[in-house]
Structure formats: C-alpha cells, structure tokens
Image (cartoon, rainbow over all chains, first blue to last red; front, top):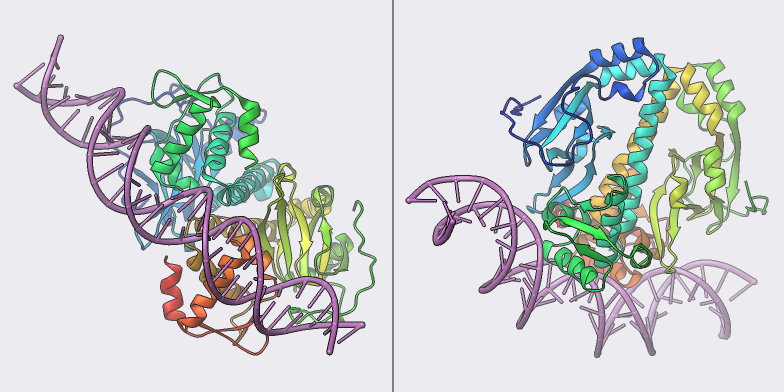
Amino acid sequence: MSTIDYATPFVEFNDTKIFGTADTSAHFAKVFDDDASLQRSLSALQRGPVRFYRGNVIALDEDVAAYLLFVVSGVVRSCKICKSGTRSVVAFYLPGDLFGWIDPQLSLSIEAATDTEVLFIKRSGLLSLASRDARVANVLLRATTNELARAQEHVLLMSKSAKCRAATFLTDLWVRLGKAKYLDVPMSHQDIADYLGLTTETLSRSITDMERSGLIARVASQRRLLLQNHFRLRRVMLN
Amino acid sequence: MSTIDYATPFVEFNDTKIFGTADTSAHFAKVFDDDASLQRSLSALQRGPVRFYRGNVIALDEDVAAYLLFVVSGVVRSCKICKSGTRSVVAFYLPGDLFGWIDPQLSLSIEAATDTEVLFIKRSGLLSLASRDARVANVLLRATTNELARAQEHVLLMSKSAKCRAATFLTDLWVRLGKAKYLDVPMSHQDIADYLGLTTETLSRSITDMERSGLIARVASQRRLLLQNHFRLRRVMLN
DNA sequence: CGCTCATTTGAGGAACTTCAAGGTCAGTGG
DNA sequence: CCACTGACCTTGAAGTTCCTCAAATGAGCG
C-alpha cells in the first residue's frame, strides 16, 4: 500500500454516502446476495472499508496492481498529472462502483474527491475465485465493460462544446446518483473542469449560462442544483 | 447481421495486412498455439474471415451484441454519428485486435477504415468456453482491459493541444504497427481528425508544422511518413 | 488527359483560455 | 457575536487556439 496514510482519524462524512456506516462488513459481497459460502470467500479477500479524507491519495500503481477497489461511500477520482503540470481527471467512481483495471503505463493516481470509504479486494484472489465461479467472472466482466463504455462516452464528450459537456456531465451525474429531486454535486468545480477538459472559468460560465436560460437552478447551497428543463437540457447535450 | 452487404466482390488489399491471405482458417485460434482441441472449439465459433471494402459498415448494434470481432487485416474504426451530423471516431482496431464489448446504448457503428478482413466470433460460445477454460477467460479480460487503457489514453489526449494530439497519434500508430522504418498511415485524414476531435484542416496544419520543424518527413507517397526526431516528438507529446 | 476525391493553404471569426479581480461561504479565533 | 481567513466559485477583458468558409493544389484512376 506504499506510503498512504489511511490511519488518519476521520471526522465526518458529507452527504453522498449510500450505505449506512454501521454495517461495515460485507458491502461488496452484497452483490451476491444469495450464496452464503460465496459471501464468505469474498469477505476473506476484502480489506476495509478504509476511510480517506478529501484530497488524499487512495492508491498508486503498485496498489492498483494488487487490489481492485470498491467504493462504499463518497467519490473517488482517477487522475493523471502531466509533466507539464496540468491535471486530467480520467474518471469518477461513485458508491457501488468496482474498478481497478488500470494500465500501470498510464501511472494514474487514485484519489478521494470527497471524504470516502473504499474496500480493497485482493486482485489475485478475486481472479482465482472468478475462474471457479462464473457469477464472479460475470460481475468482473460487467464492471470492466461498464467502465469501458463510460470511457468511450467520455471520449465522445470531449469533442463537444463546453456547454454541452457541462450539461451532459450534470445530467449523467444526476442519473448515476439515483435521479434524486436535487442534484448535490459532490466534487469541486476544479475536479469537474479537469474531467471535462475545460478551465474552471469556462465551466462556471457554462453553468451560469444554463442557469440564466432556465435549464437548471441553484438551490440554497452553492453545490445544490435543480435540473429544471430536461427537454431543453437534452437538446443542449446533442451539441 | 442485419442489412450489411459483405457478399460484395473484393478486389485487392492495401498493404496493412499482417497475416497471409492464404491461411484463412484459424487466425484467432493462433493465439492459443499449443492446444489442438481448444483450437478446434474456437474454430467452430468463428465465421469468416469476411472481407469489407473501405468505408463499408461491418457491424451495428445487433451484430455487436452477438459477436466479438477479430481484425485479420486492414483497419477498423468504431464511430458515432451524432444527431447534429458530426462524426466521432471512438477507436481504431488493427490486425490482431479482438474487440466488441460495446455498449448498445452508445449505438456505435463498426466500419472498415481500409479494405479489411474480419473474423466474427460467437459471443455466447466464447463466453461459455471462457467459463470452462481459464486461458480463454484470460485472453478476453486482457483484450478488454487493453481496450480500456486505450480509451483512457484517448481521453487524456483530447484535452491537449492539436499539435500534441497529432504527434501522439502518429507515434502511437507507429508503435502499434510494429515500429517499421516508415509509417504508412492507413486511414484518411478525415478519420484521424474525427478520432482526435480536430478538423482535417487543423490536423493538416499540425502535420505540416511538424514537417517544417523537422520532426517528421514525408516520403514518396502522400501517406508515408518518417518519424525523424523521436526526442523532439516526445517533447511535443508532453504538450 | 481529365475526372474525382483527399489534402493543403489562407483569411476571418468563434470558442475557449489566461490573467486579474471580486464575491461567497464555512470554519476559526478574538 | 463578529471580523478574519482561506478555499472555492464567479465575472470581466484581452489573447490564443482552433474552426469555418473558400479556394487551390495534388494524387489516383479510368
């Protein structure tokens, strides 16, 4: 686990958690809710949940080579610092996401975009379990292809206009978070801008623009949004 | 296979093939060169190689749902036509690439970027084979994670400057094609531009610019390049 | 040679970035 | 309780990059 300090005391979570913090044992195993022996095998491979403060590094290449990660609560970002000093966010992972098939060549760093709880799952153990149990293999394949589909959508997004990118990001996030009435954006504008390949200024202008034209509204807190006009939002998302 | 016309007579291949056209039987099975019974199982799942002319559609969603694709020769592009009429190329597949885990939600179309030979492999059959043979499962997982890594690199590329994108594309292509002395770019500038999120004009200007500053040189045919100064190329690729 | 299609080049304009400043909010200490 | 602080977000003006439109050049093929 290299030099990561996950023994830091943890104070409080933000409101993005979807699992209660009480049952910290078998979050990932819940995916296989019918087979007790399988759940035991999975629990044996888990480590955590481990808590991280916002901004801290969760894993680097060496860790990612040995573990898959399962997000229990909060938001995780996978990002790359270029030699030129610029940062790109390759992906966000939300509660329930299983990920970790990452090319060490890319040398991405996995970080906590908000305070977060993460499960570490022994990669080798999970793979050998998968070779014996087709359900596990299926879950792994599904997780990977899901991530691939998201990456491809991300590619497509990057060649659209700033306003389209922002609208698409917010709508997708709203869907991924369960289509609640309000969209409480959990990550910072800097993170979102780095994900969308924009500056924070352009992102801010895009959002303000959408607000002015009545597509979205800001409610109370700064980061609480209301997606008002889904029809017109969808039209902006087409470019 | 829907409405695709792959019975069209085929005239001639371009020079990107890596397999001889004589042994048309077991291109994919060659990956498992040690086990004759496994090779037989795999051959039974294959269909093809099927030949396609440059520009023709190879597969749409329905086909992709049922088959994985293995490129025998030529270049395959996976692309998306937006409702606004713009086209994006999500990925290029070269000889030896196995792919097809594509989200039907994205409704990508798989097309021949050059004249090409493609193997169709029954998805369901391959998956059940994978659940019985760990080597097959491994190849599938490797193929998927490779594609994911490429997609993530693609995302990173899209937030860089035009010149950096062009330089990176050419260098990566040169590597993927085996680091031959000359880089014979198999696809059109339009395809490359759509892959990089640029216009053909900007792409052309970027390449001309690199030529003028001695990073690359054009040799004889229009699409034959010589990567001259790898050191300076690498510097441009950093942004 | 003359056709078509692909690539190149140029000039002007739009979109996004950069730089700089102002505003908002939550936490902290007087 | 209130001012102070620092992080985050917003706004404006100027500059750069890339796109758009238009036209010229070049390559491949009958």
